[in-house]
Length: 264
Ligand code: PEP
Image 1 (cartoon, helix red, strand yellow):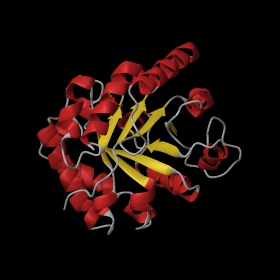
Image 2: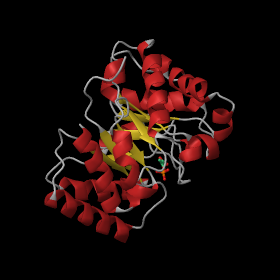
Image 3: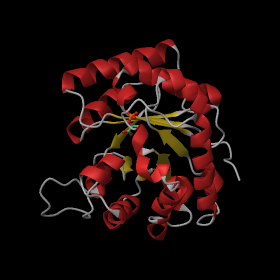
């Protein structure tokens, strides 16, 4: 089963970058590029995930644009609502600040910050209860890939959240990002054929969980650049990209978005 026509997503993950001054330059440059050669809302969803402290600056800058660019939180608390949880930001507080999208399960958080499946389920539950759209990241390590376990690991990561996502929420509130860990920030990418093969398996796996599997956007992430974006965009089950390093440059990010918009 392959994807129905899904409007692609191109999402920039800025991680722990950049400074406020650079944020302003980025948003101005990106706006200029969009004005010179528009990318319509219908051809591609655009989104950027800055740090928590830059969310409102970015959100304000995007509100001046002629088209929608979503502002995405890079994480959300496992604790609900409000309360004595120093340093945390809940899904309800994100919603209150009009942040509608959140990344959950990025491999850096899984590996460096202890986000295991139980924590991820709690975060997801809170995000979905607040009506947020979740970009849920999955991906195997190099060792797992070399041991032939890539498919099994990734399908398990999807299965891990099945109990907390209602069948009708898959298409409306979940975007999956397949990010092989060995390809993140390393300059190595999965080949487009490898990405398509895993994406197809993810969609097959989803079909066991929800009737809406053909409507769930599955993004590829891992050293996507303007030079390779077209190859990924041409794959039927690659419905966009989660872009780290290359998203820090407005022009590179624009060209990746344009490649996906043109493929649609
Ligand atoms: C990421 O961290 O989500 C990512 C895909 O990074 P990069 O594009 O730098 O590999």
